[in-house]
Image (cartoon, rainbow, N blue to C red; front, side):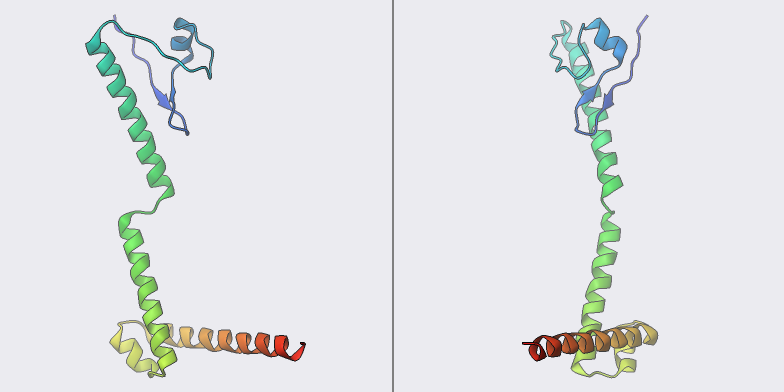
Length: 134
């Protein structure tokens, strides 16, 4: 009767074998294991299974920590649109024309305009304070 066991891949990408397998191999947990298998077919199956588990784990980690391509593209487009809108505000283009031309809401343009004015005033005050106190 064939006994099945789970192969687990650790966070560092190493393969974790069940304690029962480690005991059978007379290996201590955490110790590096190298073993030979007489049956090449079995060895290939085992290595394929280990590699599949490792790739599944790495893919899971990647998806857990990295946004999807669609999310990255959407964020990039959002940032590009914001940069263009800011550029047009600084060029003096009317808010209504910006909203219409770049398909954004008028409220969004007004919000960015207000934030830019605040940032500019803050930068001027900081510069005045630095030059005034020197």
